[in-house]
Length: 217
Length: 250
Image (cartoon, rainbow over all chains, first blue to last red; front, side, top):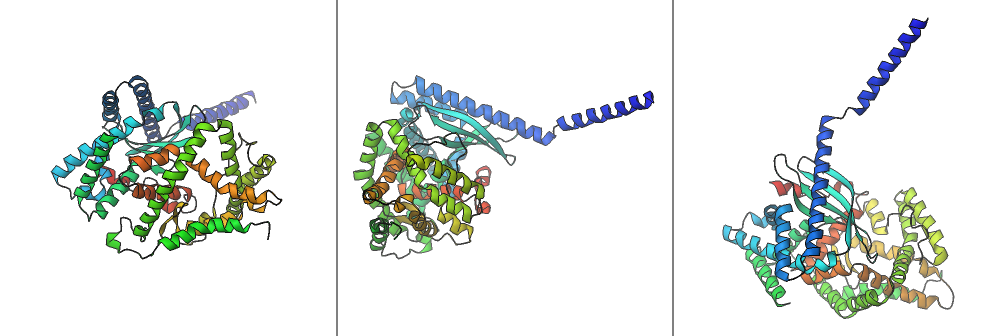
């Protein structure tokens, strides 16, 4: 009777261990996805930290600001991809010369705009929330932007990060309250080209004019 | 009469009258549109220019003064109040859309915060209801979106969302307030909402206004993306936020 009881206990213990082991066995695909998400989260936190350091350290001259922004952009953003995507369907039809001109002016406008907004970034805090895997190439790193002064409401933000196996992670888009900055830029550029009769030069001319106006301000 | 002041009707009708009078409202050929959802683009751009002018001379300076001079707690109180005013509409539309939990949350919040006329958020740490409007309810019932419309003073809409806005406006609790001071309160409500909105979105709107090459196209794009997000639970097939990003890797 005692032996039967021991056998019963041993059987229960075996199943208990088996069930426990099964419950902590992680699906390999899930594990890979989780590790990509963790890497993307760390990548964005590193970017936020670099932006904070940049904002705090470089306020002397406008050129210093621009140099610091260029360094952050080159380290963390897929500039070539963003440039190509932002021109929309007209990129394919553009000549090499137009593409080079566009890439240069588009970047100038972005960096100039960012350098003017340094003061608005001060005092903002990024609080990570939930990140999501999107297929095998994209991860959305989520968070909330909080204004330390309490003057502005919290804002939901997602960083769209390209995470292709064997390639370094890069930010391709920032989405704020459901509004993708890259899609908005693309829609604006396509509208300019369409209203210019489908000519890519219409966009280039608008960019040149915008930069000239910025230089005067 | 339900204590509904006729001046409120007039106030709401004004942008519509302006819209109609500004528009020869002829649609432009598809190949000349910069977006297929915007057949009245030329008219809409004229209205947008008018709205920008209004912003230059009225809204932006007033919102800046408001931001710089009104103490933060008072700003928060007014923002709370504007949010509170929208709750009855959220209750109704959540119910129409079968979102009863959201309707209950909004009802509770409306009743509790109603003790302070919505000025103090007494349920600060509780779950917040998601704002729901009648435009969403119309989408829920299958009404098509219609065209993009830039409305004088009210900004971006679609035909459907503009129709919904009229319905929501009728359920503004301020329109049900009686008493001798009621008309003044009602008249103050719209400017307060406009100033708090402009103030809370000060940098975002200025970013579009001053740093865009084509502020109209940028506003339209942002409106559609935001609205798609708000309709995500009703029209999930249209709400794939990564839609189009496949092209990024081609």
